[in-house]
Length: 370
Image (cartoon, rainbow, N blue to C red; front, side, top):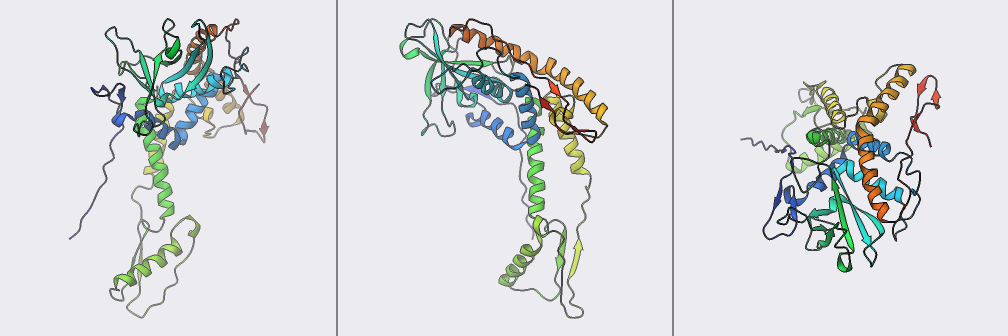
């Protein structure tokens, strides 16, 4: 009798956002951990992370022309540093959060901190559809140990005393939720997860290289359980894994009792190649990256064609994807810095592509000019 056990891998769906009667904060996804899921995807899919980092680099450019090096909080962080963290959150979570601290008179912001958006949960709407509180926990999976701290939502008229430290949570519009932001790549979450799974699959396939490729049948009787384990460990230690590739078998046997070794050929030799191409295409589409060359992925072609393609692709990428986010964020930061007493308008020093480093007719590095 044989038993076969299969694992169920659920698709990544849009998060359920719901109010719970005995909780002051609004749940964001299963077990209130949807942002943690987005962090895990950022850390497990190389293609996805590179796409996010590329967009953040284009959004922040070379930093602010004025005030970029100005220290804006007691930690000694500059405006550029806070802006870069906020841009990273905006692209990862579809939202970012700032902790703004007012002076005693309530007429000026004296400090600005970046707060990781994944550690923020929204309070519930009041009768006038306003959010009055946000909650911060360093670990929402363990709120008993890391108890949420309440912050007043940004409010220019209620900003004194205990309400002087406020949270400004900024998100783009999404009809799925009024409380939280969603990233623009949300439609490709399953492909991003699949990219990570493919990587883990190939890693496991190499680490356990012998198992799926050979069937070994010893024809000299059935050994004891202990002998089976010894034989299994010897074969596994000798032949499995990437460091043992290329080794050979040396067998001794009596006539008629020779071991048979049968290669197990894959019926899907091109399956994973095709799958990876599909996943790559879907992830790039979700991030609206028209050319993989922007991420350092080359698919052939001469210097001229690559250079032209990168220039055209970057211009389109920046103007349609990054510049709108940049303008929106700069405008939001401008409001804050005005309340901090900064007199000059904020302006980003834009990045440009430099093709000066060329070796043997190939573009070996795409640099951002300072």
